[in-house]
Length: 240
Image (cartoon, rainbow, N blue to C red; front, top):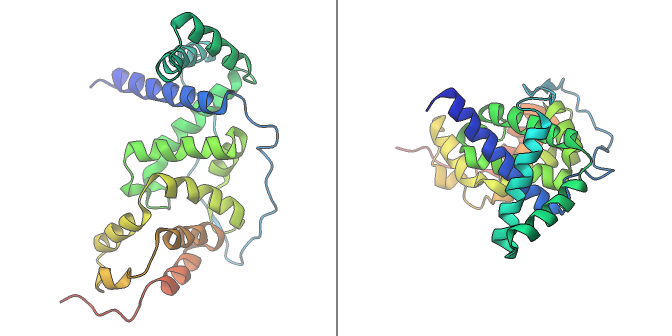
């Protein structure tokens, strides 16, 4: 597939995702308070800022994107609500009018493009995600946290130095979209942990794994190692 076609495919997926999000929220705009953040409790360890760029405007002109979102909305409304095309177009226009402007769509696309380009290096086992799981995580985060707060979280994520609230906001959408317990199992095998994996993970639940990765953002690698050490059975025998 040519680069042009690949870019078009990514754009089409992004437009459909944004339209779905718009339909779910019954508005394309961001909530007024979504950009608010809580004070950060900084750990003693010096935090490492992750390789996420601040969202910037990318891709086609906003008008073209808005046309794509509107058309995708029309299709979704016809499919999900059984409207004829005229009714779906009227409803789609109302939804788009409720948006805070084309800059919101541009910001959504910028966050989406940034995330999709960098998810393989995400600290929460990003190298094991599929593209669909990565899309699920960022769209879920935008729906839950709002556009402005999501952009702020992604741009300012760091291994260490984040508040628990912000760390959970980064981890929970991932936990919703992937099987963290299974991915940890695969990761332990990949890095060659000598202990029996079934023994190590006996009694460990997915929420336990999520808490280990929250510790990555709040206390860095040392925090993760401490949480992992408390969560697994270190008395397990080695294989063979």
